[in-house]
Length: 185
Image (cartoon, rainbow, N blue to C red; front, side, top):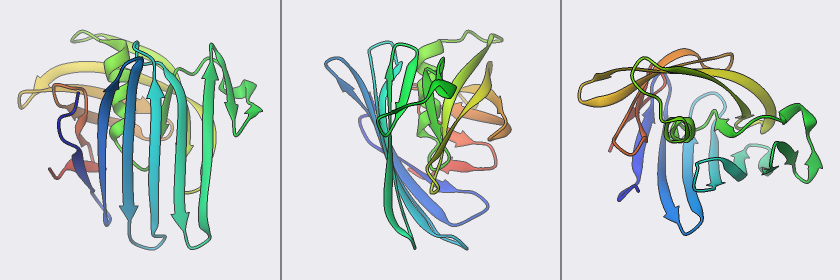
C-alpha cells in the first residue's frame, strides 16, 4: 500500500493533514491526522479498519478543540452499526465512512467499488463531522471519469460535500479534492 504517508493542505483555509493506508493480514487500516487553524481551530485523528474487500469494520474519530478532547467509535457487524456501543439503525446499509477532516476516507469507495471509466454507483455512508463528531447517514454518488494528468479521476456528489472532482494516485489515495484539499507531499 502507501509506502509513504500523503500530506494535504486545506484550500480556502489554514490547515494540513497527513494520512496513510496500511495493509494488514486481514484487511487494511487507514490512519490520518489533521490540524486546522482559523476561526475554530481543531485537531482531528482517525483510524479506520476494513476487511480485505475494503468494507469498514471499525472506525475511531478523535477531535481536540477549545472544549478538550473527545472521541467517537463506529462498529459495523453485517449491515448493522453501533456508535459508542449504542445500536444505530439509522446507519444500517452503510459500508463506508467519511470524515470532514481528511480526504483519505475517499480511498474506501474508490478501492471497494473498482469502477470502470464512465461507471457510476450510489452508496450509503456514515458521515462523521469533525470536530463535532456527529454521525449521520448520507447518500453518495461516485462516478469514474476519464483520467486527468495521468491520475484516476472521480466525481463525488453528496449532501455533505456537494459535487466535487477527486484525483487519486495509483493506490486510490486522493491527490486533489476540488476546492478543499491538494496534495502537499
